[in-house]
Image (cartoon, rainbow, N blue to C red):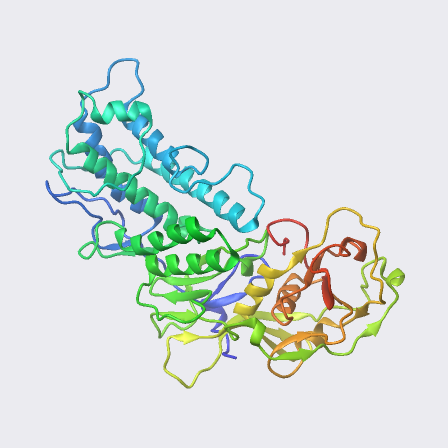
Length: 480
């Protein structure tokens, strides 16, 4: 494990006691992405921008259209507002004009998170666009934009093809619509999408059209195969890399995060709170400031083929004796929690990243971040209501410290089956334990719950692992 950097320079993630996440950098986005375009050319000029600044940089396309449509009639809704209403319909997920449509009631967690994220981002982008109306634009702007099949509402069909319009204005509006759709979709992976720093090479691409191949691939898979956990995760990282660091290397798994020139992208679950399912988080920090790009990849590319170790011995207890949280099994006290790159002898930009826990007793634990993220995605939440069924076999209670310090390489399981309870009061210990267990039949149970809430949760076979405590109900997979 690498040692954390000096305390004065570290960045701390929100929640979970503030995990040290590398050396803080000072984000330096450009003042504005908006520039007066040439009569027959438009793009966002080269620089580094926040998403809001990118929206502002798209403004000349829309403002030129509105200007050329001439003045609005009295007592009518302005053309600019009507066109942005159309963008809102395109970015919503429940309208006939949606560019990423979902059913209104979505039960699948992967789909639900994507839908809610798309709606949240879409509303924010439109809000920013409504507020960005006073920048420079070129009244004679005239560009060619291929039709992207983004639909117009009836009132905007009349506006854009009626007597007020001109033939080239639809080209400008089409480009604006498509750039907003590309931006919405490119931001889907990020929990804190407002803070992401986006590098744009205005000489090599028009706006953010460089992410089109990633979007096209995802939309094809979405239509032909449906949304699965593997697909969503692969899409998130592929799109995030295409947007921020297209030069990152490729691996079989695609990784789960990365460092790029303007910060790092990490699993959002590491910041605690109401957990997300697949989302990542932008942080203004670097794990290795000497490197520009680093892809964070899993210790085990396929958890199914990873070595499996037997869980350390525990104490067999009758289920009736576990009607309350077994607080006597105290969690290890964490002194320092940090992220560290696993040392490598190769000069490769593909590295493993660990959660490093320094305990009060002087011992240290390292857990692969990729496996923590994977374990969290596959874990089950205990039911919030009461169930009557207790385990038919006497559960075995294990020390979280023994599980975390279990030597050797591989993921922990129990060859003889059984129900295995691992109590903890610390959220970060619960997360670290997820990264140690074979992620097939693991249940997260809040401290104020009971074993009866886990009887009908998870797989219908043994072994079953119950991490009791360190988590509350909420989010997609608990609240840490």
